[in-house]
Length: 184
Length: 193
Image 1 (spheres, rainbow over the protein chains, first blue to last red):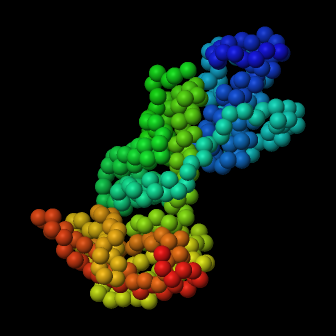
Image 2 (spheres, each protein chain N blue to C red):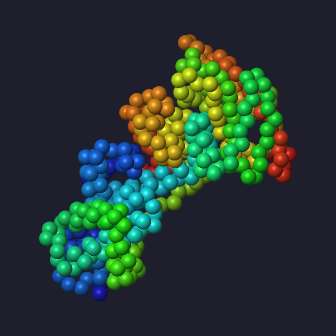
């Protein structure tokens, strides 16, 4: 056993896993790709638990493929992960029961990535930042992110163009990130 | 490893809203799965979006709202207390611990207005807060504004005057309407801030 003392490329990891039993490399793939898959899942499924499930299912499929050397181009790991994520979401939407079978075989603990999920924000500070926006900026972000209105709906409501809504939303996002002390 | 072509946070917000053209969404997704730095930035944007939802849901923002927004909030089960004084008139008001939102409805004909501000004043008429350039639909008949609910629950009995102000061609302010809210505290607490 050895520690990962450097930042191996995706291709390095793929090759190592294909060469034989390498739990460290597999763990690194999970640590690296897990959060990305989970965000992809949350974006498309809009549900934290479903995103978590997606991450586990995709990591199972990816690790299986890597162990058997099925990924012919080692530098295409990200594309393979994305393609597998897309296929898995289609399966989830078809109501596939595959997850249960796979989890029975692999166990959920083996597939948990070690890195963080969505960072926590200082709620009071964010409240102050949102309150500090101009009224139209506040309307756009509240209507877009809370009320889940499309840009077209927001544009009609504010009597501006859709492009203008996008500009206002972008400005508001940048202002909020700056106010929260996040880098651009 | 540092990203050579980091994706702007506002583009990531558009991605999260599914507001990107499909070709752009495709390339953003490919980049995100391959790039830890941009994926981490997306996680920050997601946290920001979730934080905005919480802040909006808490109903502690001083802001104007649409009637449609209010109806949806009511449908979602929020308990909304509303007061609608007439122009130049006053209304006795309060707030209870069960209330989720506190709304003032200010009737006014804004059809000829280009820009309208909402000024909040104390009982002596001294302005302490202003919402500039209130969005309104064509042919509006009222402006709805939200008083931060936690502030209202903790507020002592006091009088607040809301003023709708228009702007003429030269930029000078003009009073459109004045509305007085006489708040009586019904939740136990100190008599003054």
